[in-house]
Image (cartoon, rainbow over all chains, first blue to last red; front, side, top):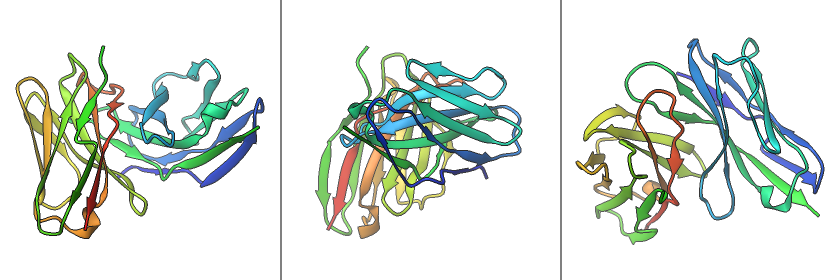
Length: 116
Length: 113
């Protein structure tokens, strides 16, 4: 079974600063997908960014970027120019690329607080 | 396109009762997945339906069941409710092919008394 580990239960960053959230995973699969979702206090799960394992280029979405290190099985999320609206729980998730059915396997999450 | 909708948003039941939760996916999406979120266990996969067939199942007891209709809408049923079933139940939809991004609904908050 694949395991996803987020080693930072809580983090805090000041507005306009940069913060990096860590995620490691364990798998024997060669083809898979990785995601970061955010869950603000409203509890709505929102996709932040997605990475295909076969792509060497790190994904970016505006202020959000990832550092994907396949050999190290590491998938960290960098948030630049942090905004108050970035305050949320952030979940790293893994999805196998083969087989019938595609389930997301989530980490325990990192609670991020952005302060003025 | 309209997002994923879930009804009801909040539900209070007592032990031993059963409950049915509903999920309407994004138009055109054929896969619906269900997840349970609790403070202790985090986010856990329940099951996935694709074209009215259960395609994948997590490690939950048989009290948890689901189905999907021809219009891709899905329902999840929990029978003989236990206190530990209190959770946020999240539904997610995707087109249904490998590696698709799953888009989540707002969730149904179930409280079992």
